[in-house]
Length: 313
Image (tube, rainbow, N blue to C red; front, side):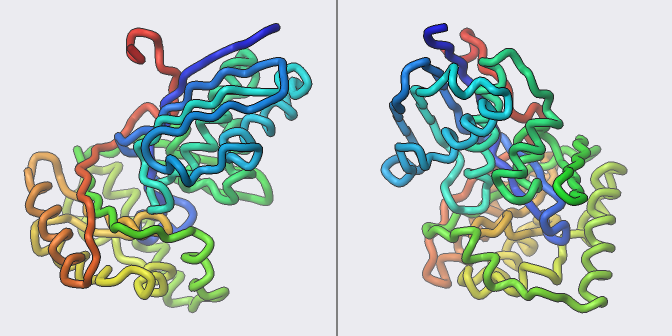
């Protein structure tokens, strides 16, 4: 069989979106690319460029390779392809709440699946990606693009992807420190009050309805959360001050991106307030001794996809 190669591009993602803890997500136009060559011969060759270079394991522990192996073994093709050349070109910040692990998982699954002839559809890739990641809120938008709503029952995952009737921009403040998801989950309570549960159900439902209807008025009222952000604020100096600064500069709403520490402000493209919002967020972080890079992003509508030769050149 020799070697088979493919290049895939996967978007960064933001999960939770405030009240939709572990269920809501979006894909944004910042990308990781994976050039994958599968080989008959054992052995791994890695090249990591950009985010995570020097920090990402370059051996069998690598999450891209673990994802590839899972898919190949499910397809009973593991003995056929025992080695690989893995070239990662990463733009999604590592351990910042923009879905870097989800992008790596989806890239490995997507690339390996294409090489073996697309044995699995996107719904089946979602099941595998969730199995590896532990929850679907980042892997779903990485696969499908757009906004996603995901549910789980036992080990089965369902995900609905949609495009909003508002042209949104996301102003992302990327603080200069890492926050592992494990640490961010450890501060969460094991049980919550009925009042907090109802609070979040209402906000998450209103967020989806406002996006699908195109209601700026109701969208502004949809970003508050009672289940995770209040507990994680202690891990992110000045988080609520950054939220207030972004809103004062014209943001529709602000949320912690995934487990953090990135913070995202939502604004309408036609408002043209991205620069002012970003400057306000950076300054608010600075007052708390945190330096932050500002990224202005838009919604990705494609999800993970193959990069053709013309596009790749």
